[in-house]
View 1 (cartoon, rainbow, N blue to C red):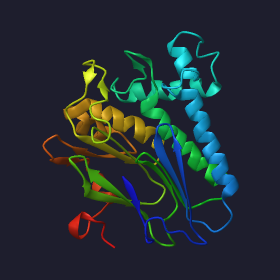
View 2 (spheres, rainbow, N blue to C red):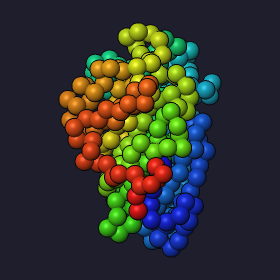
View 3 (cartoon, rainbow, N blue to C red):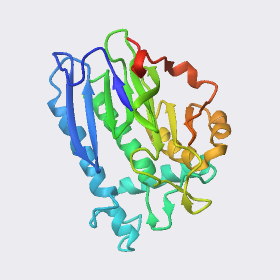
View 4 (spheres, rainbow, N blue to C red):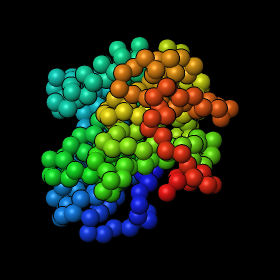
Length: 271
């Protein structure tokens, strides 16, 4: 997913500062659309993201999560953030009828929620430093605050998982979160916890809401659900969903169209 705006990609001016940070095995971008010096705020955000990686990485052997998985410490002995995230995972598991879970065969793994949670908290850090209008994007999971420019909502292009160069639609809004789970980037890596095997019923699931913590976890769960995802998402308050089926057909919850802005010619967003 790509935020669209009224300035060319990479452009920056007095009222726009863009920072790119490599972390958690992906690329984060921090795009602030308010005038002012933002180095301290960006520094605080990048410090936060790397701290989250140090605590929750399943690849770093010294992380709290890795040590939990090896039985070297308990959740009570771990960084307090671990208990917070595992509590959010337990709530998401209940709300998704078990299709989201941090209890995977290889051990505890909150990956399906922690990136969205970290990004939402990063947006909160920017707000605490005075930024009203910004975008924090981590590997295509996006938390948006305020507007892209005065009077103009943010616009996020949703890519076709079967052809990443093609946009299926554009989500437009203020203070919105957008998360997508699917096979386009990493192949069949999302496990259906009920089947104990990679989910294969969908090509992608996009969730739009206010909280990226919820949207990230719900997108993972919806993808795992497959055919039952549309009915579940329709009944969940505060979110809307766009589902792409393996053959390329799409399904939307009734309110998803309220967020859409039609793509323009050649699959690009309308001006």
